[in-house]
Length: 95
Figure: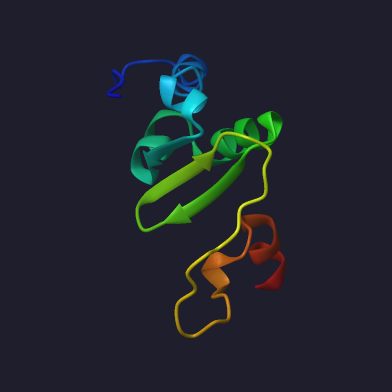
């Protein structure tokens, strides 16, 4: 889904979370687009408000649009989580 970049942040968020993909369970957005259109903090707030789960992978933010737990099925070596893989709230406290 391509959204016009001249939308105000509230409209941009509303459009993202009303996409058909939300009903299918997963949406993803480029970090660059989130930061330019609404800001990371506002996006995180909206994900939390809805009770969804958000993961970051590469240059993408992936939102699981339900309240089900997320489980890593295939784990890479080394098996420990990197600082980057920790929840954003926790990572800031560990630094």
